[in-house]
Length: 340
Length: 228
Image (cartoon, rainbow over all chains, first blue to last red; front, side):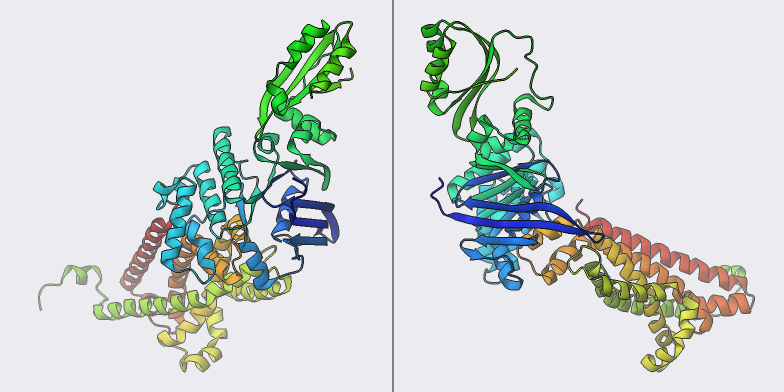
């Protein structure tokens, strides 16, 4: 994936806000390269600077330092018509949808098409119909936003963002105001769009689950700094930074964090499977071959986007522990001992 | 003639009802003319105030402060004094200081700053989110004002026009004291100076009716426009 050219490059971008004569940093100097066609996630708690980082891409926020390069062109200091052209080529959706309440669904979707000359009303009507069908709202074209559910509103937002056939879609906490079921359907729609249109998606969220479902790569943002960056599978299975661990643990166990294993006998091991190894009977053959015993303490078999993965926490006992670990590793399982 | 009619029994001093009819027409003309001009001048002023205010599209503390000062000064002068103060300007503009023509400039100058403030606060009710979304779509400031801010705030703006129209009814009545004509003039000259209470009652009743009708009309339009 890394050999693909970067579509969006942020070079040492930083942003601070001037509040009562003092500069309050929102984003420390940050380098980021987002590749064409990938779904790139940025996760962080509120105030971590993710919203600022996202807005640097379409220059809704101007960086106080550094450069924004899109498709090889430095756009950091463009303004006027050039800036409006750039923005028209980058779709954006929002947590609170930001639809025009005084216009119907149809007119909301047509809004970006009517901002620039060159498209007659018949062509606009055709394009709007196309978009309505893509997001599954063909029957609601003449409704007003107030008559729609949250998920439907976000679909209108997505259709509107796609109207000008952008290459990039920015998602600002696009599912944070939605219930879990609606979140899943909106994320599925985003994935379809990513695959069918080859659209590059940059999304920010505070939910690791959103990252797990749709993203290829993730950057973890903490106090205005990228503290971890990598493929979602790697970050998810082997989080390094405490903030990342907290996010992963929240996704696995809910908000209360991990359980307490202090009373359990044996050595605590975390086994991570990914890809096809997830579905192979590796553990049972290791147990048979080495005669070790294990307690299954917690575990999860799931998918990260398209990649199946499993992560099990075991308490292992037995004479041939080292042989067992070696055999697991030989089968492609990552084994980590958990200190206690 | 016949036996005194009910009107003559109840309002013995009012001998000429056409005079009251004419006063109504004058009041409506003053109201209509001044309201139209107030909106034409006050709406862009309100948009300007809004755009120049903090963290808006054209955040400009200086132009906001200057405009705000002018608006506040004009709003703090009692209308009756404003009318007298403005007489030279009124004469220059209209070649008259009395009658409908003489009343309109001070009415507009008195009401436009008030209306501009109401427009400013109606625009504030439009979420910053839709403005940001429009910017993200590449809209110009002009497009954002015309296609986002004004349409999204239209119910609030109609409510502001209603409130301003009702304030203007009050101003026209005050203008009557210095010869603007209309219902206020009638109430003052016959009702107060001439001590004819029936004139007072009729004009007040007509003013109340006018205000009621304006409010009902305004509310009905706001209801039709709301899609919340």
